[in-house]
Image 1 (cartoon, helix red, strand yellow):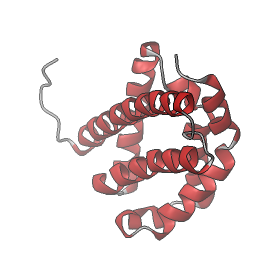
Image 2 (cartoon, rainbow, N blue to C red):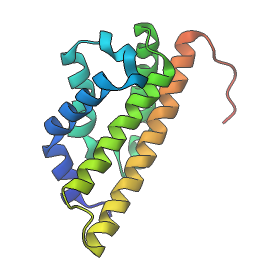
Image 3 (cartoon, helix red, strand yellow):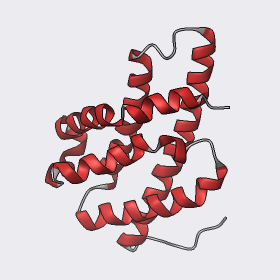
Length: 151
């Protein structure tokens, strides 16, 4: 059972996480294409992930929603002219900021907290793995690079 307390703590600090991510995305040499995206748009994209984290993780029922959302995101990034490598890096930074937040807030200090934190992080990793995959699928579809998929 994923610690709802940890998820709630992350969701209530979504603004802080989003602002940190934005500073990182704007300064990171691996995400220069994001310079052309307005702050309000960037903010909303990251804030939606952080503020609704509990909706995305820990439930197989949301897999189709993740597929739809991130396939659309990949197609949108292609239309915006953002390189796929930069989109993947932006998603990785989103995940990385969650881990840093959990670490610096002392959410991993005790044995029980560490177990709950790792359980949560495993769910976060699974979510982001799926998000990256479906983003790439959407990007490829928009670029006309698709072929018949098996499975």
